[in-house]
Image (tube, rainbow, N blue to C red; front, side, top):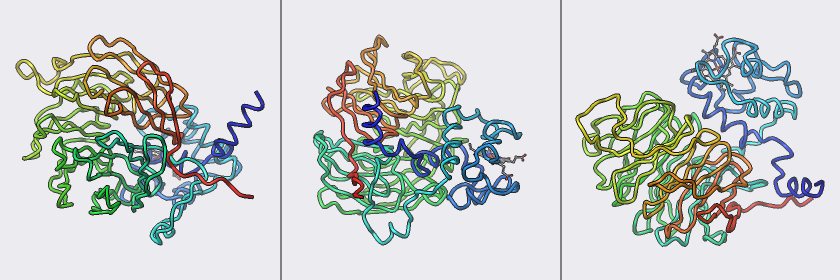
Length: 439
Ligand code: HEC
């Protein structure tokens, strides 16, 4: 047992000390910065950078290093100070509040890699695995593009690092290869600073376009079936469509009332489905930007969407923990508040759903949850086929391999895991080149 713990600590030094950039900041970005940022600074408190966060708001410093019990921040998170934060939302789960407390107890240190280092184009050095927020397979199934910290990593499916593609964005939230495999599109950004789309020439490892859009992170980039258009959501509630070849934003739509987390095009590329925190799966017309209708019955915030390979069917998941398969088109006369588009409903997961995927032949679906579990189901019967376990933290991305034989997962612990359909782990590796401390 002791030996096991030792191994864990040796392999995951991050477990020994809580990291601001890897563990605390992602929660702030998702739960807090919508109201606490330079443009909308509730209670004079911005928490988009470490120094603003430390400075605090009207009540003074947000925390006192080493003393979580006396920290304003924790009092607002636990509800001791009213109104409880996040304002108007669900309180953070206890384990996240504990994480803030433990981080403050350890001194509330900043471990963010400074952006000046980045602009000098120095390579990022990893001492522990960065969050794995997105990945995509090349069409031939041989290469995986994986999100790093201020870069994209190209690795072989066996885990060999092939290339590092450094960019401005701190995090990448969406990755997709064009059908010919020659171009890689990425959407991401740096929280409360900027959103960015990157278009890479895969063979030459060259950045063809870097397009700044929005003053906040872009989420969920997806390509049209012909690879010509890239759609993404954003923290500013907008849906944006970019021309991949020209490297230009061609359309911006404001159909959502809250953050837009994920996007997917219909089979013919003429329509787009977007999902977000406003609970809606919205169908829009790509060429005019017109809003068509909500595909789903509004229940709870949605985080993920995937499309069936051969039909205009979409799988969505979010805070309600239930994956739903919907058809994009309403079969009968339009009735807004009905569920006539629903095809299949799957088992409730143990935590909010953060990622979904449909197999290349359309027969299986997979859902990943914040609870660190990925389950595979038969699409038609909704029968559970496999449970992929062993993750140390939440899931951010799930895909089937292009041949459909495996389910691949990525998330908080930075490891890429390949499972067979029954949930047996085939292999796993950390794509980021981690430097072993020499001391
Ligand atoms: C929907 C908007 C909204 C969200 C989301 C939100 N806040 Fe707030 N926050 C507010 C408002 C409004 C106040 C002022 C409350 C009051 O005093 O009446 C506030 C005040 C605070 C304060 C007090 C600051 C001071 O010094 O006065 C802290 C600390 C805080 N929020 C932390 C957080 C954290 C941490 C999160 C995320 C977990 C969060 N907030 C999410 C709106 C929000």
